[in-house]
Image 1 (tube, helix red, strand yellow):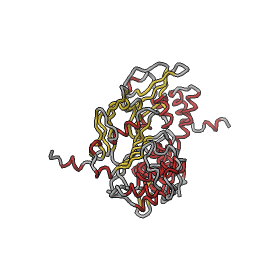
Image 2: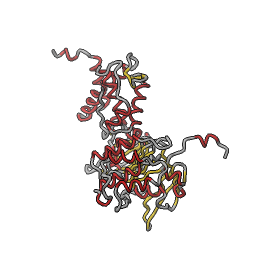
Image 3: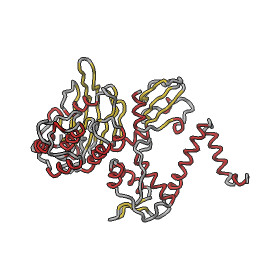
Image 4: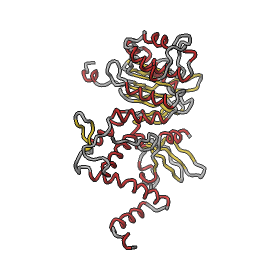
Length: 297
Length: 131
């Protein structure tokens, strides 16, 4: 165990190892492994029911997976220490708030639980997100409740932030404010802030994500650095189908009987391309929305 | 101050858009030696993009010798011809993209298009012949 380098090396902010989860015979998370370097912003994409929320909950230790493990900031997520918990921020799809409290009471209640809580920061976030601090939580609109949950997740300056559909009820201004707030803060201990966001709002992910993970029926369909995916994943149309290959992510027969394929050129063997293919000419780069549709249609 | 026109939804990665826009502006003269680029933080805030993406683009431009970091001033456009070819090629690229698109629409093969381009390049006064 005497490996001085191993202890000084940067540990992954998140390490997920062969996680699987099924409910009543239906596998919702299927052998998922990935790791996230500190300072990354990982966007998780997938259709409704693809398993995004289940994956996040297993990753956070809120749901116990049948197989596999997840580590957050180097600590197993099923045995998080108080120290690690204090360095996490999580916004659930439907945040649990105390309806009977006023906004400022809810904030100071949660704030009392965190050693690194900054009341000044909480106040500044409330102003930025236009939260009426005297109003009862139950009277807030869905968008305001979501903004309150975001304030609660940010104000203790966590090192790892996890958002499950954080901005679904926010208007475009609120969404921009939210995205900006991700990069303004430093974590309490000065470590790079790592963020995981599951969202259908692809334009938001396009702006902030450094890495993307496409989930399909509980499996990772495609994952990588955003710039690398832009440069290495291509749409390709052929007259005939292509044989299954590593890197052939998705194929679909179009109405005109041609085939549309999504290729990951990092893996797809060049000699499996039909003769006469010109990579630059015949393959098309995809924006995130087009890629999402092409992978899921 | 130089303004970027970033389109996050484009298939071109954001860092690439930043690099290309600076290169084009330098080649066209709208950015000149000594001009300052907006700070990483300012670009990230204004366009709501990840500051790391802007840093990556600036680092690439610095590597290519297009810009340099100057203390107290941020990123400054460099004088010199070190990347002049890069800049001119970047300026040519939109015209090439257009030619490629039209070639595809007309079902002209890459080989035929290359031959036509070569011919055009070798006959610089072709236009004048028609006059």
